[in-house]
Image 1 (cartoon, rainbow, N blue to C red):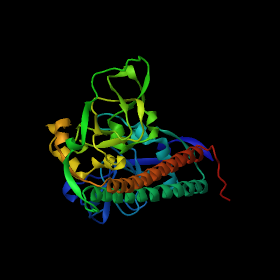
Image 2: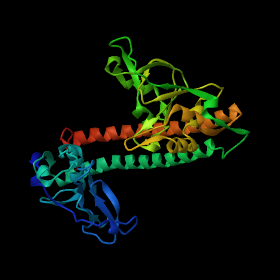
Image 3: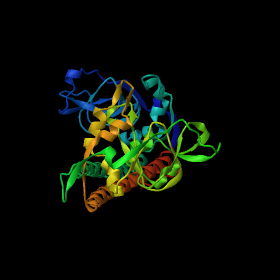
Image 4: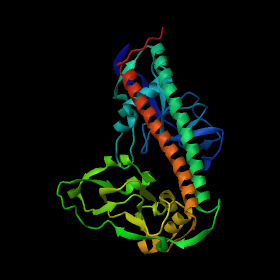
Length: 378
C-alpha cells in the first residue's frame, strides 16, 4: 500500500565522525565516506556493512550510498537509522528519486540536515515484498548502466592512449616532419565585438562548453540556439574541417582544447573567447581534427600561456609558433584520422546508449515509486 508520509516517520540521521587528513589513506581495508562518496580509506570503521549514508555537505550533498563492507563515515555525511522496517535499497531509490540535493541550503557551502530531511513528504510503499520487487527491477537497470559505464571508461582509456601514440609518431609508416603550426594554417582571430545585423535572427552559438565537452561538433549542435541581438558575436561562415580552439580559460590545462566542424554552416557564430584555425596546406580532415589533441601541443599551450589566478590566455602568435610532427603522406594522415574517428564514434554511440538507459531508469522510478504502476509479486 502506498501512503504519503514524512521522512521523519521513517528514519533518523546523525553525522559521522571526523577524521584527520593523516588517517585518510589512499589504500586500506575500510572505505571512508564523505560528502561526495568515498574519498579515501582508513584502518578503522564506525558503521557496519549495509548502512545507508547521505552526503551532508558539498556540491553533491544529498547523494546516497549503501556500504558494501564495514566503513568509516566522516562528519561530512549522515548515517541513516531506520524507525520502521524497510528494504534499504528501496529507501535509497526513493531518496534518489525525490532528489535530496534540491532541498539543500544552497549557501557558499551547500548542506542538508536532518531537520530538512525529516520534513520532506514522500510516497512510501509499506509492503516489504513490493519494495523488494521494485528494487529488483531498478537494480537490473542499474547493473546495465554500471557495466556500460565501465566499458565506456575502458574505451576512453584505449582511445586516449592510441591518440597519443599515433599523433606523436610512435607508430610510423612513412616520413614525418616537424612543422610550426603557423606554417600549415592561419588563426583568423577570436570572435570580436560585432552584432548580427538581423535583429531577431536565430543563430547557432559555438561556445566554450561545446568545445570542452565535444571533440567534434556534431549535427545535434543545433540545440544551442541564441538570439543574435543578445550578445556580441563574430559572424562566420563555417567550412567543414574548420578547427576551433580555446585560447583562454580558468585553468592552464584547458588552453588549446579543440573541436572541429563536420559540416558547412552559414548561420553559426562563435563567441569572443574562441579562436578559429584554417589549414593552408592539404591535410586529411580527420587527422587535422585530432592534430591539436596531441599532448605535445596541449603541453605547449599550457606552458606558454600568460596570466594567473582566474584567467589564462594564449595568443594566436604563440599558437602559431608551437611545433608538432606530422606525416608527409596524406594517406597515413587519413589512416590515423580514420582509426581515431572510428574509436571516438564508438564511444559516442555507447554514451548515447548510456543516456538512453538512464532515461529508462528515470521513467521506471517515476512509475514504480509513485504508484503509477503497481507490481504483482505473487
